[in-house]
Length: 235
Image 1 (cartoon, rainbow, N blue to C red):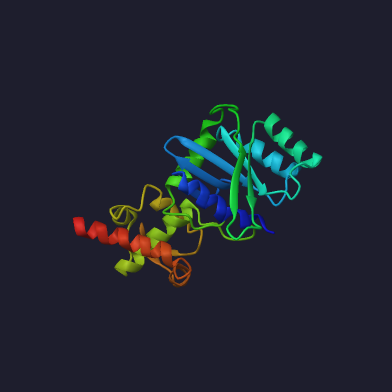
Image 2 (cartoon, helix red, strand yellow):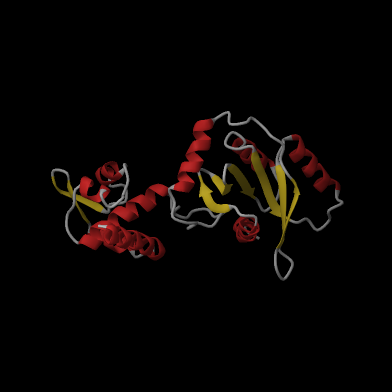
């Protein structure tokens, strides 16, 4: 059983309660947001010291931190009782997922108590801004060794889509008129993914590598093209 097996059942459970769920945000396996309520969930195949360290670290981001694990076979076992006691003492919530049913069953055994309320507001704000900067949930929580679709990557995909759509070199100012955002110039200049080439002072074009890599993100490119179509309609 992989940690990522827990993600989709928990995502569906939280979405039914009105939360917007996003995977792999600022080291959090799962982040769920509804209005001002921000929840972080750490997914683990089993409760251990690592998940306790990770979950308590997330308490600097939000009051509501849960640990999610597979439902135990023997709920009366002393080991399981001890895990619940430790989580309560650390003011963490606990979610179990029973994957042995025809349809996975998600159960919130208990909720977390308030911890250090908004002590590190910069980290909390960074999580909220990262979620806001993504067009959707393009990752699977609990996975490792995979490229994350971050807000930065999505912004670069939007810029690359604009260059491909217009099929000519453009300036950062022209691209910002297409709602590519304040980071357009720095993304073009840093060229982190090798997608952009400066052809003159302050003028950039899409590289062949950029065209090839855009094919790896069809849903995001489609979303970007829809944004461009709406902008063209208002012009």
